[in-house]
Amino acid sequence: MPQTTIFAARRIVTMDPNRPEATHVAVRAGRILAVGDADCADGWGGGQIDKRFRDAVLVPGFVEGHAHLMAGAMWRYPYVGFHDRVAPDGTPWAGLTDIGEVTARLKDIDASLPADTPLVAWGFDPIFLPTERLNCRHLDAVSASRPVIVMHSNFHVLTANSAVMRLVGYDRNPNIKGLVRFEDGTPNGEVQEMAAMFPILRRLGVDFRALARTADAIRDLGRTAVRVGVTTTADLFNDLPDADLDTLLAVTGGDEFPLRIVPALNGIARPPDEVAARARDLRKRSTDKLRLGAVKLMADGSIQAFTARLKWPGYLGGQQNGIWNMPPVQLARAIEVIHAAGVQMHIHVNGDEASETALDALEAALSKHPRGDHRHILQHCQMADAAQFVRMAALGVGCNLFSNHIWYFGDQHHDITLGPDRAARMDACRAALDAGVPLTVHSDAPVTPLGPLHTAWAAVNRITPSGRVLGAAQRLTPTEALHAVTLGAAWSLKLDHEIGSIACGKRADFAILAEDPLTVPAEEMRDIEVLGTVFGGRVFRP
Ligand SMILES: [Zn+2]
Image (cartoon, rainbow, N blue to C red; front, side, top):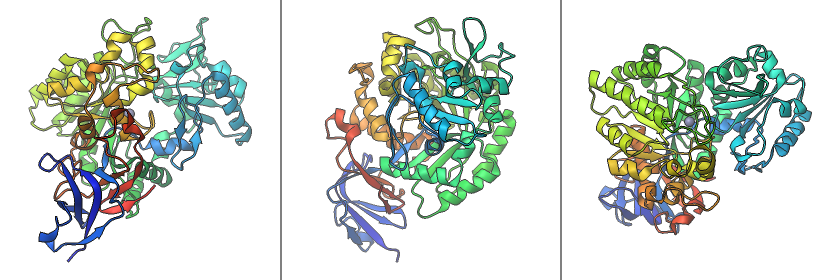
């Protein structure tokens, strides 16, 4: 008979309404056999009691519904962001709070790089440095000859030096959409959104997503996941060519790899019928730890970069409305074709005009091709209001709100991009639940750090760094937030029948916490120490 291990804990928060609390969980062959007291497995012949976590609290393994494999890989490049961050190996990187500090770090790196290597840095965000905007002149001072690019934290914008602009001919074609200009009309090195950024990345041989698919980068993500209690993560934009798929299958297939990955196929680079066919093919290669078959579409850009598409009255500072990564006609066509093929879609929408456009397209597709449980998800969906949530509920569309944004960018949305009214209803978790929309919340790592306790904390408290409560009416209870980062995220990835709660028959995936997230003071939820994870019944420690 297979072995049974019974994990004893101070408390087990199950997220199963039939048995919300327990002290013991019995595990056999990687699955949950029984939940209850010390004798819960007696009917199954009992088992070996594991008391290592008897003082800890077990919750369902956290599920991150929107992150990127790049969360491991980006640390191959130097970080130049505003907030302090920790690399997967535990190395702290100090945040940089003015452009002088950014260029000083870049100069240090320039001095240590071989001559023929481009200098690539990431994590920068101009919105935190309002007195001066990074441009090519700053980066020319780092190097006049070596190509230098600084990828902004949202991955929707980069700033390049003049050597890069010359290399791709942008100095001679200043009218290309997405190039920001100096007052005299010449490009200033800032390049916005995918169509304008791709030629640069291609020319420099920089492919963050390909790098993210190397075995080491995937293992780094696994290491980070254990540190923050995550046992399943989405990877919401992946080209998934066969060679990289083999690497993903090999790494995730190893017993020592502690993470289930759910990649979504890049749905904007190829015609929708090809995307749909590829997604359906990929399904057949799914394993327990690599779940394939969903598609990611991308409607607009990012609010803090002023590239999201907003309804009236637009940006607070009067900036021009954002950039479509998929213009409405193309988006509607893709949504119809991919939906008709029976493929689940995760649709990136940040601004409220983008959410509305996606909802119009989904409504049209659903009326032509009715389908019950399509499980399409609006991702980020940061400016959706009560009326849009009502439409989502009517269409059976779920949402994955970017609660971490309230902490990382909330003050900037209040003061600079949207103003107090709309900032207060950003990532409106309460409105979503009230309308009956299935909800999860996310980090979009590496845009903000992977860490569901922080993501849940942000949804519960809605506090900004200046101490403001941004939109008190939209706060969740700790139980609702914990649901959002476990069962809610599992639902969005079509895995709620297997993971997301601690219940008989489900996979034995737990986060091991030093404190109970439902009873600590709500403002301390993000500070709870994560002691490790149990993945498929096996213990992993950071
Ligand atoms: Zn993302």
